[in-house]
Amino acid sequence: MLIGGLQQMTLLDYPGQVAATIFTVGCNFRCHFCHNPALVLPEKFGEGLKTEKDVLDFLRARKKLLDGVCITGGEPTLQKDIVEVCESIKDLGYKIKLDTNGLRPHIIQKLMKKDLIDYIAMDIKAPWNKYEQVVGVKVDLDKLKQSVKIIRESGLPHEFRSTVLPGLHTAEDIIRMAKQVKGADAYYIQRFRSEPELVNQEFVSENKFLLKDLEAIRNEIKDWFKVCKVR
Ligand code: SF4
Image 1 (cartoon, rainbow, N blue to C red):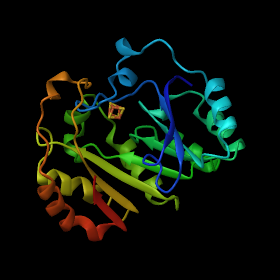
Image 2 (tube, rainbow, N blue to C red):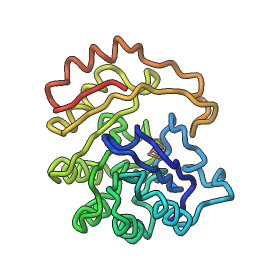
Image 3 (tube, protein in one colour):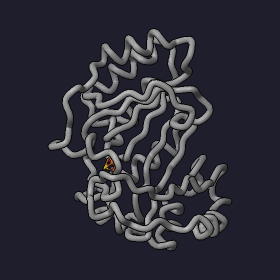
Image 4 (cartoon, rainbow, N blue to C red):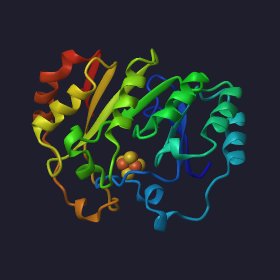
């Protein structure tokens, strides 16, 4: 597994758990607003990658302090040994949360069949008809729809979430994204935050939606989910 970083403790990444977060390197999307270019753009992949051994040794030593491990990216399902790494983490007694963009449903299914995932979060980047515009690459929408179905019907705790910004999404788009995953456990509308470095530098000075506008949208869709929040 190509590991670009390890956050040693987070209370935010894995709902209800004290967790560590593993950041995998490499992504099959190029979302303009992505604030992890070092994990996404091959020319920015840095030196000093961590090894699985480093990470597993760390997790072994922290067993009494942490409950779970969040595996994020980049896109973790691209890692050739994701199954083996998840097995090693589970063997240490941790719960696993997987963050995914949903483009590799067969890997998600494989991990679920082996009981290696305890919580799954999938990004919904755009209404289906605008997906390629937002993620910057050609997309097989059937694969994304398969992932939505697998996750929604998995019986596992799950969430879908959309990072939104006025330069790419309209209010109507947000409602359409929510409709694409209607009936899911949770849907989060995430307000875009800029960083000095994004995958597309032209988006560094993009505006954000006003919180009150996002709350108004949330009010329209909140009954479609058990949990629906702006964050
Ligand atoms: S935001 Fe987009 S480009 Fe960045 S890691 Fe996630 S899926 Fe990949």
